[in-house]
Image (tube, rainbow, N blue to C red; front, side):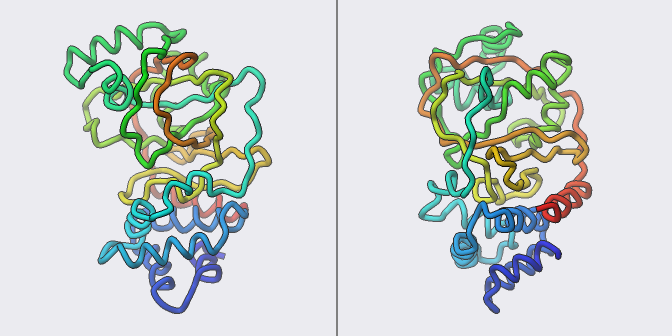
Length: 299
């Protein structure tokens, strides 16, 4: 069964909701959204009533926008948005002994949301050079104990993975040459703040081993749908509560992913580990759509 047919059987009302579902076939990344919602419903991560409520809200606030954008706007403006991060019905197992959570950010994001608010840095060439010297010159990592303010994280959440996986499969073997592969495997869309041709430097923030904030398997409700060009795709329950990334090329290996609520600060135990420059990007939207349907079919 196609994902939109499945959504129709689960969510259809013979009216605006059905029209919204049909519209997913007519908009960019609409199939990816339909498959992600279908995966969340088929796997039991989300209840049909939860999706119906959000779609009903979205069709009232989206105006003339296409179905995917209406859903994105509906999520952004929904009065219960803060609970979406923990909406999954799946439980998450503890990290393996010796593992750490890790999030990967580009250098400009690190400036605007971490080093800038805490230490007064900006995106000027002098500031960027100083940040590289301070946080990116030690391959083993540099303490982020001085980051006492974290600001402006989109949707109030952070995407994290397994440091053990990132290090063992990429950083350890490829060093600074691994940034392009990591970007692809994590499904990181090039942010608008980094235009084509501009330097695109990735940095890992490794968490302390005793990080105790709850982390959840992501669902469609925490992904960004307002604009096209992203790479999120839901995943069935694996018994451990980890999602899987979808690579930009749809050919790279997946990586583990979870989300947690934004932090007010970093502090002791957090470490900056330089990854390096992204030197190539391979994006295949047609392959991504095929992978979306395939992942839906496998649930």
